[in-house]
Image 1 (cartoon, rainbow, N blue to C red):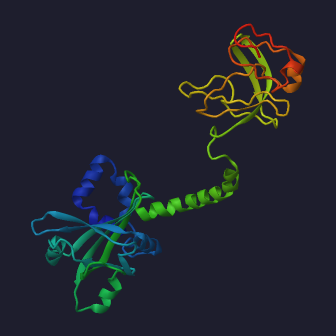
Image 2: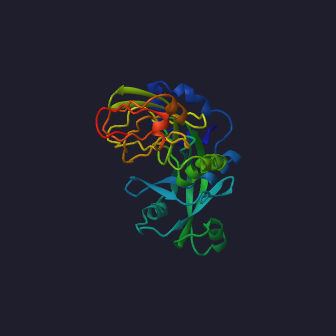
Image 3: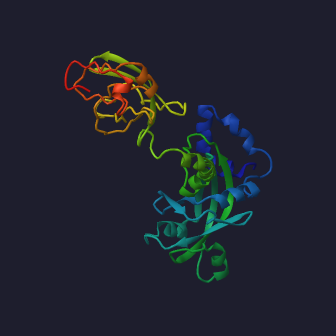
Length: 323
């Protein structure tokens, strides 16, 4: 008889279609040899035990097929032996369509699908309904932590099975499968977070906020009222992007200064939202202020050298009050 599934599924009508469409030659070898594909091996048993759902079709008295989905925790379909599987029938919507069909015709077709790996197993069998008179068998079919009562058991004697091709199976994943796939990535992410935590702790809370200490390294008088300053970090470190040049549009004033002083370095603190103060008459180091006269021609007061104006420079302002 050969392949038992082909013997049951490939009827005369099916074989005629295969011959007409040119596929019969490819299946002819399945009719040869001893019977096979009706006894479960380790591969089929492991596949069934790993599934959390199955589709089961029965035939009604009107000749119409009825397909039902059954689900539960992985392994809810028990492999009782190499020729028998079974599962517990829990209380549902109380239509009892499958149960009624099986009382008249015990034949069923089942399909187990492994969506992530695009694999499916087709199985043909005959069902025996198990009631409360067989408590030991019902215990073997029971599912731990079941929330509904078991009304009966389905015990299926296997007539034939066949592995189907993966074509047209769309990969799908259950929540548990997604968690298993993501778990190594989450663990790697936690390890990276732990490794980066010390470095992050050393960084400022937000780049661009807070005072930025700078030293004036050069001054250019562009116009009598506009002066350009060249700034640098007092410790020689690179300045953050945006520390110099024009202020961003809408950012508001950015400058705050300390007046030139013989005892202090000329420093600026760049602070977002700071109110600009009057421009110094000489934004240079005390040594440079002592060597060159002040040429401030703006209306602001001369603020150079903090009390040593006469000794260190000669004010040449032409407008406003004298220094």
